[in-house]
Length: 245
Image 1 (spheres, rainbow, N blue to C red):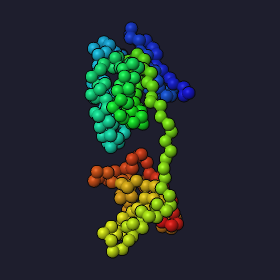
Image 2: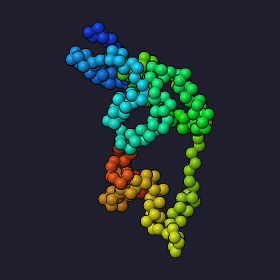
Image 3: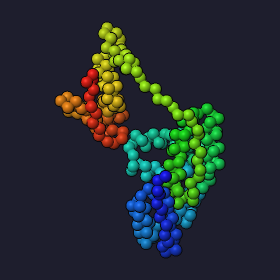
Image 4: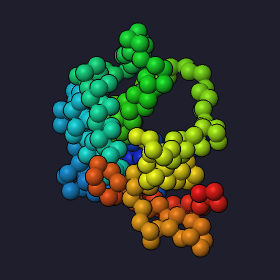
């Protein structure tokens, strides 16, 4: 497995121990910041400021989401908020962090299974819970990470459209004298299939993004909720233009 680093030192009678950093540099940065906070009187241990009784809901609002807002796009934040509200807020949110142990999580998982939710859906929500518990552990609100058993699932086989099905989609919009005839939709559908772009990325394209001579398309923006912003992964991508396209 990957080697993890930890911060472990004592200063002014305060023992500091934080685990789970992915690099030595990250651990050193955290240690330096904590040391400075102790010397300036800004550092407080969770148990000393009465936050040992903090609930998952309180931790989510006070620590987790503010941190995530600096790391990911607004669309990801909206997705996470909706998932948390639907799955974790009412069932585990009122529990104290220190009470969310392996048994509590197993009961929650079993209950969701009994309610008819799919194994893949439950495992997705376990990921949201796990990320919050990992941060709580890093910040010292829980001593140890609880063991979380994911629901065992069989590997899903991805179904892809055949070339004949792809052509049928495009031809559908090319059927003249029908109510669904639409040349723009036909072109857009063909473009999506041949490039693999998302719909929002295709709708944000300008002619300046297309290089006919080199047969490439630059994907560097998207339309999302009526606004133009960067692609979902935040990166620009150069896509080749298939000869058929």
